Length: 140
Length: 132
Image 1 (cartoon, each protein chain N blue to C red):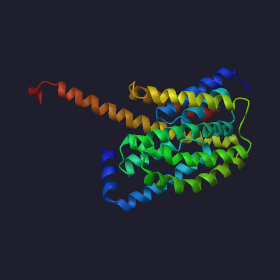
Image 2 (image 1 turned 180 degrees about the vertical axis):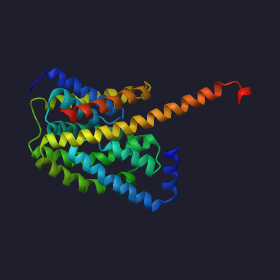
Image 3 (image 1 turned 180 degrees about the horizontal axis):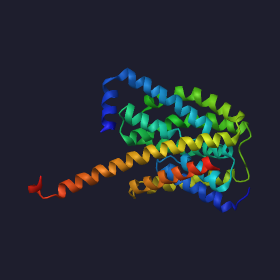
Image 4 (image 1 turned 30 degrees about the vertical axis):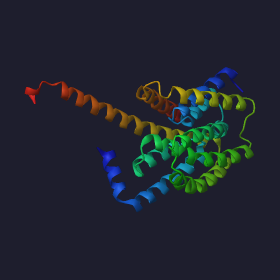
């Protein structure tokens, strides 16, 4: 452990808040731990996986009560994913943590770019429609 | 827009939609197993774009789909000796506390600014991880 425990706890809370808000907590928690706190990529992954379990059990109960869960569609992803998930978890144990971190970095950059572009496009569209509505009708 | 076109296409091609969802599922499993996270970033768009589900339902269903995956991965990672007890317990506890806080404030603040910050941090962290 190379940093004060407080920073680890802060990273955990930040990741947890994002996860609770449904924005993908692990995609924030793992980079926070590896980039800023020099945690080995596999250890960061393990922490994320373990802490996801109690949180998502709780979330599932709440969502089920609100009738937001579609069990059939959950299985449509869970069943095929379980096979590749088990295989790739086993593979991850054999690969170096550095290589995994680089792979995760590429994954993050691609996702972030895609999301940012789609958000910018959306914001641009709504801005344009607002300007269009503000124009005096005789100019149109 | 492109998104609407994609949704329309999959709505009228059910078999292709199922195949595309299974393909997205395979990738979700790989991300979850290799990186220990990020599966939701693939599963949620699969549900909204390909299956045409509304965002809230897609989020809820994605959590249920990823829960068993995380359980499988977590066991394999722990057996592989990757749980560090020095800080592991504290971070896990903090994530759970943050998670409860996050789900409570979810309804209270606008998420679009937060999304921008979130994806900005993701991009910056990704680039730093690549350069490290």
